[in-house]
Length: 156
Image 1: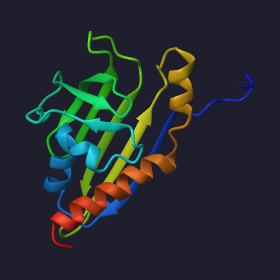
Image 2 (image 1 turned 120 degrees about the vertical axis):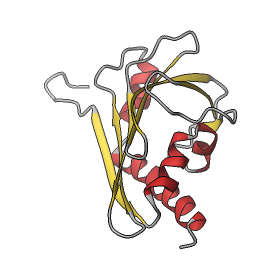
Image 3 (image 1 turned 60 degrees about the vertical axis):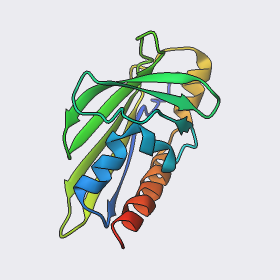
Image 4 (image 1 turned 180 degrees about the vertical axis):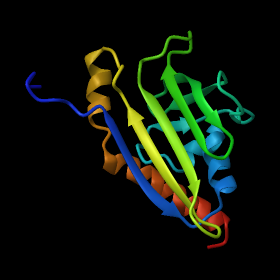
């Protein structure tokens, strides 16, 4: 990468979903639900019973390649915002952050913003390569899949 080019390390995407905040947040805050709508096709499974309820919670996710990740919740406001930093199961994080923000957008609809921030991500190079491949389009894919699940369950 050319050192003179400023690399974008925070990407986000937003869309309105025709489902209530509570339903969408339940899908995002329950790791067992996340593989159903993951647009990166990176999440394989998470054990049930890990519903996030507070900053400091940690949930474990198995990736499609078989690795396990411990996700440390660093932001949490029920029904509004959740963010976590993934890392090894020994407790160290990699430096990137995944954030979901929800805002009511009229009767039964929600404006959802998904952000990936890898400003503090550290090596190895393979991890940096994966981070660079996460774009607004891949975040949008997660939003679109989340909308499909949430809207179907909301009867829309």
